[in-house]
Each structure stands twice: as C-alpha cells, then as structure tokens.
Image 1 (cartoon, rainbow, N blue to C red):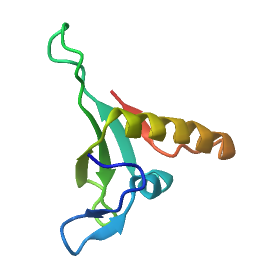
Image 2: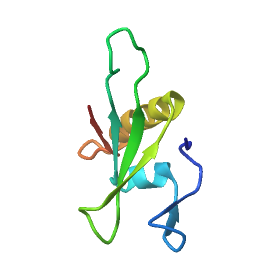
Image 3: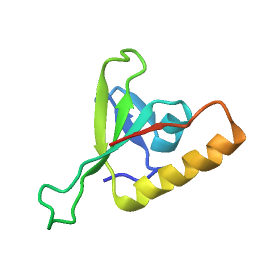
Image 4: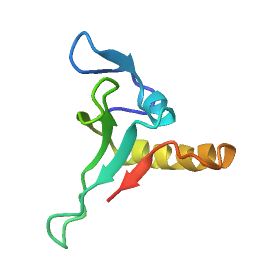
Length: 93
C-alpha cells in the first residue's frame, strides 16, 4: 500500500514517476472502495484508480490504506475550498 507522497511509477519501469497527491491535483485519481463481502465482515478494499496521461481509457489501480484514503478525502475538501469550480479528484463507491 502506498501513501499520498510516496513516489510511484506508472506504466512500468520507464513510466511516469509521480505521487498520489500530484495525480489528484491533476484530476487523474478516482478513489474507490468496496463493501464488505458479508455483512459481518468489517474489511473493505480501498484503492486509487489513476488515469494514464497518454491513454485516458487506461487506468492503474493502487491499493491504499484507510489513512491514505482519509488524507486524500480531507485534502480534496481543502483544495475544493481554494478552487470552487474544480475538484482534486472524484470519489466513487
């Protein structure tokens, strides 16, 4: 699992090196979470889905933890206050 400011490489070893924070500020991240499989389970999967710059139809999924998820949600609200007509990223269920 990766953190918000951890360097990641998209698209293999020669790909783009960036962070989730930068990707979110570029509007290229969609946060997703899955519901627990059974009602008695408390686990849910969290991931960031990232659009590639050269192919908007191609995405890469990166597993994130609850702290990273919460930090990205929080930073999106702070960023949205500074940019009233844009969102840093989208959240999808």
